[in-house]
Length: 40
Image 1: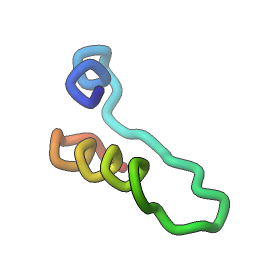
Image 2: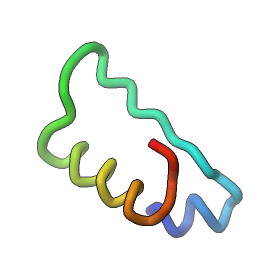
Image 3: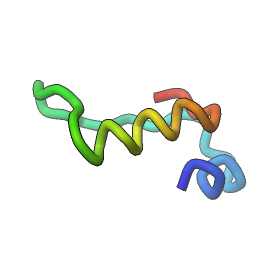
Image 4: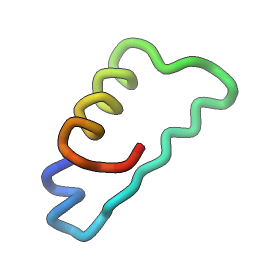
């Protein structure tokens, strides 16, 4: 997902957690996005 976002010109993404902590699948996606070079 992060590779396709970067190819489309996206450099930063925001996960609206509504006051809750990241965990589970959302945390995995956010970590992968950071690793791929996106600003989260």
